[in-house]
Image (cartoon, rainbow, N blue to C red; front, side, top):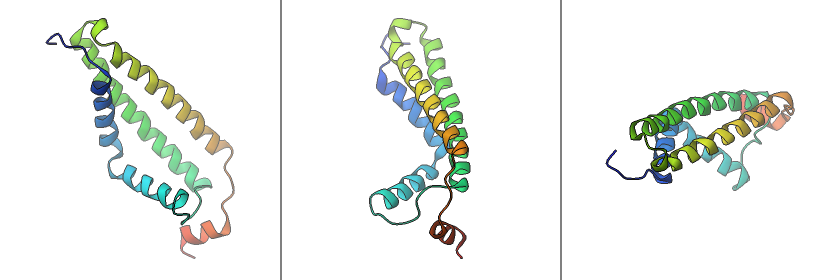
Length: 128
């Protein structure tokens, strides 16, 4: 609005705000679980119907953060009203759209081709 050009860091700030609002502490827990399994080689493998349902729930959260984040970005584009100064914002919206479509395909594939849970996973999950 003051003549400055919006750049990618400005768009990433909108993404960060929306993802933080929607996911909050859940993202830290998710990262801890993945680190524990893939790096430390501890804990259950993320498979099965429960994992698929959780992935679908998180995809819906991703969709909500996408709606909030792109809403912020489109608001900035509207307020600035100069496409030459908001090109970076449009680029981030485009990339995020591709990412959410890929994430949807991934989510559907988990739901369609759910792997059976192993006994050890059920034991750990159910505490039996």
